[in-house]
Length: 400
Image (cartoon, rainbow, N blue to C red; front, side, top):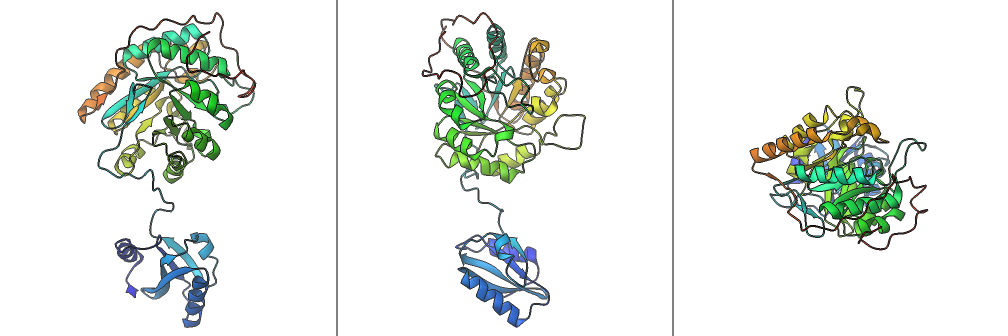
């Protein structure tokens, strides 16, 4: 078979049903009949079914079935110059969009927060859970502004082992108490598979931070809880790597995955990370999972957060996760990026307006019956040494 170009070959192969993912196996320019025969025999010996092709003045083979060996393995065969996949480099069978409208992911026992399917949800709260009374004030503030869910860190993933590592399970109890008191479901980050059973007993949704995007045992353990999983993109990961990480959760049978873009490392210094806003509409066209954006971590400066957040919603993001704190000078981490409450309230007004422009709406929490307040602790939450040193928690019902 003679094809005029590699692009033409891609078009012809992609239009024909194949038993395996197609590859073009190009031979070296000096490959004669004997070399072509040797390559064909080697491929047959590996269980790969091929059809010989000619691309202009070059010879090669297209894989049509049989064994699906990696392209780099086939490239080690003598006289093979290159191997070109004619499909994405990795299958994304579970994350790929199947319908014209992306599905919504509900968070909370009563589905109090919705992300996707025409709903825009905002997750807001402090970077880390420290002072219980302040946590409740923040929770009430973000709820009043229209946030659909509360956020708060209890096991903090820090670059330095000497930095504050979070309050651990006592902080988790405080976060659960504040969530119950104000009627907001909450997200919190996990970093170790050993944390999953205890955190899942309390949290409404599990957050996988950027640095643990490829912690595959953690992804599997989180997926098996059945809880919604918010999966942040690693600061150096491409989209395929991010989606393959999501496949680990989806493969457990848990379809409640929310993707979160939070910025990539770059040579720029005017922002902490380079926010990839363009990935939002790209994913919305190709993947059936909700996509939200974290403008706080990408900006690293609270004054830039509203502009980045507005850009994300205008690009079609299904929500935001934003750090909010009334007195950032008192917090132990990420003080520079925490929005003051007044700025957050203004941002929420902007989100409502931008979402309405393309027929979406901000998903605010429904009214709730009054809940008896839980007495706050009298002192800030002390940091935990590790995920396994604190006493285990056995009930989702919180108390002192």
